[in-house]
Length: 337
Image (cartoon, rainbow, N blue to C red; front, side, top):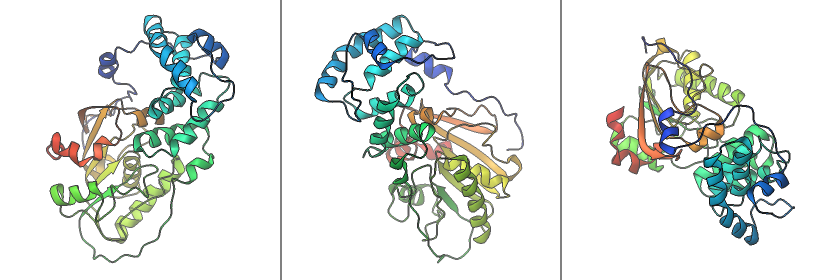
């Protein structure tokens, strides 16, 4: 981390855009009325917006989705793009509806359907759908009650002796998720058994609120720094996911020394979130192509900084693939670290 020059954030890597053949659009999108977008798409949906589309809407959307998508690719404009979002809000798969709703808010004069779709998506049993919905909803309606249920609070006492070790730092909304928690979380167990036997596993392991705000991350960064000092763990390795990486970066600015920082699917918000270069031994980023949660977060996909070693998995869209033990085995992620 002692050499290299930070570069600009690249929200959409050029090679990913080319691979999808996605048309370019000018900046500055006007807003459209839903009824006008439905006229452009050649269909008419129910006037009363609902969180889930009704069977007649699903059938109508199914008939029109391909022609509307072809019209967008044939003649890309703000109007054809917004019409595609209008139809996609009735797609049979909730992940598609939630992804459409994440952008629909910015192109419509009536965002009610989008907000309801996102609030409903927050309750999804699919982690990717839930996190895309939660990140997008937090942008447009941070006080929405649906978000409160994703946050939890627990207090634990320390039972472990001080030692040099490594630690997992979870991301937004993940405080109560099982994957990172010792001793039975699948990712915790995989890292402990396969990658680093010194992975911290006591009851008082570090956790933060998982709140979606700069304030929540700043408080967490300060708390992580205090936790490290309390446990005398200066120089520990950090395995971080999503905005857990942002928390880890802020902790280094509070004086925490890190040996190796592993950023798994970390949104790029440069220079707001950067590691303190003199206090970090090495930084490795592992991500997928066009992570949907990072898109909903409005973050960059790739660190354009020679001090951060980039590794792109041959996987598209899945924010959680980066902490999937099967993915680590299949693509030998430990060798990337």
